[in-house]
Image 1 (cartoon, rainbow, N blue to C red):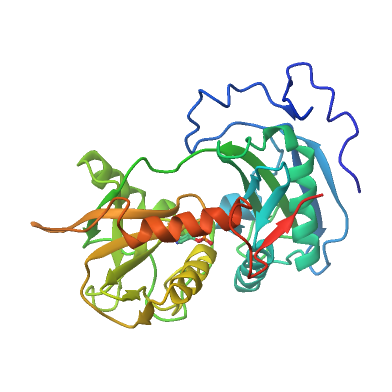
Image 2 (cartoon, rainbow, N blue to C red):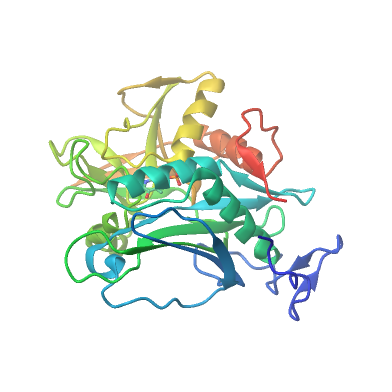
Length: 351
Ligand SMILES: *Cc1c(COP(=O)(O)O)cnc(C)c1O
């Protein structure tokens, strides 16, 4: 299925030197943050319980109608994903490892008893929705188009159990930077993000993992912190990750990040950063003290951590252009935006 044919004819579109249409945002002077800017289209594909997803369509972006007794509303049967489309200097549009998002959604769907789109369906749908919203992909260097796939039980069911119908939906929004500057974390010592061991849902992007930690996050923010760091719920001793990003520490020539054990979300940025750091000659260790700390996620890419506060004790870390995180970020963003050669074939051209 091809995107709508009227994409070049938006009345408010501005034309670049290359004849490319852009949405009516002042891309040069407008510092995009990480919040929703609605675009023109979304992608919707439905499937009944026990069936396979087959045919989706691109429809105008807008509210959706679902039954009050939909599985997602009543019992949290839902997953989300997040990935970005970048425009390169020469005008191509690149996705970063979208097959990884497809596989992660499939693992989550299996855990939450939902059918999931195949890898090809997922990646093709992402490509289609990016093309349909092409005028919202920021010019090179001005941000990216954040793509948000959802998989949810939308069929009505009063009793507890898998919903009779499922919806795979993708919407997107142009975004800029997630955080401005290095982060100051507070270690959360009362609430936990995930159940210890592999029996919980900490390792999937289940919608149910986020609202339960809003109180901790909101309180930390009210006290001037950027976000919270969660501890493992078995011992309360080991750092796991933040609300929506993985964390790393750096000591001399080694990097450390918690292992994927069911409680940590297996971040695609995390996985990519481990490879880049190893290529740069760093060793990946199980445990160590730290000179530097940083966190990773699609939304923020790589962000340095300035401090961590546990009860009354604050530890400060190295930040700024000399930090390893700055080098890792530059390399990864370089690959994502087509400025650094993609030797690992991580990017996917949208055409
Ligand atoms: C999405 C997410 C991450 C980051 O994963 P990426 O694939 O790098 O975007 C890390 N932790 C949590 C809890 C997340 O939801």
